[in-house]
Image (cartoon, rainbow, N blue to C red; front, side, top):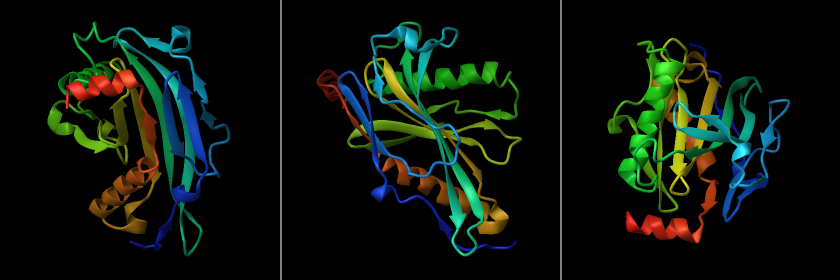
Amino acid sequence: MVNLGPISGPDYKNAPITTIDASDIAITFRLPERLSNSHPYIASHIDLSCDSDFESHASIGFSSLELVDANWEYRFINSDLLAGSFMLGMNLWKVDISQHNLKSLLVPQDYQKWLLNYFEAIFQSAGEGSPSFWRPTSGDDLKAFKKDGMPWLKGRFGSLDIHRLYYWVNTPITSDLCLHFTIILSGFVEDHIAPKEEVDKMLDGYIDDFLEHFHIQYSPETLAEMDQYK
């Protein structure tokens, strides 16, 4: 093991603020000025009434709209060598709640049921039922947390044959809409940094650093409905 020393990442506090407007919902967050993918994509305005903008996944019971595709780097301070990359894919999901027998994604039990249904469907299709494809199968696999007083869930999924499982984060923003983040943290080789447990904790911290500057302005209707289920 050759430890290459401390790692430097983005300065989110001083990064520019990005805003995505979606009708009466506003999503704000900070992305590093220097992105590493050659063609990053960041949406600016979404018309929620335009279903044709969404990509249908009828067999799973939802449709999706890409909001962000962006990558940025972390480097070893002492050598400026690449330590790893943070690859962010953020999508808006419109869920067919009737197909899944749900009342609302704002109901905690319904929200959890939807996510478990989604990952099971992905397991059966992309994972082809392979035992090497890991996904959450119960509420114990979903890590719940609150942000700005609102419910969020996060966890891991992907093939056990790869070096590191993918990360996901999800939060409902209306009765049938939720934001879904797929985060791939590539690189960050344990032999150059620390034991696996310490690296996993460090990478969880990198995700928390990004989310610290992520905020949602909800519609009055959503806030009123959320109050019913608190």
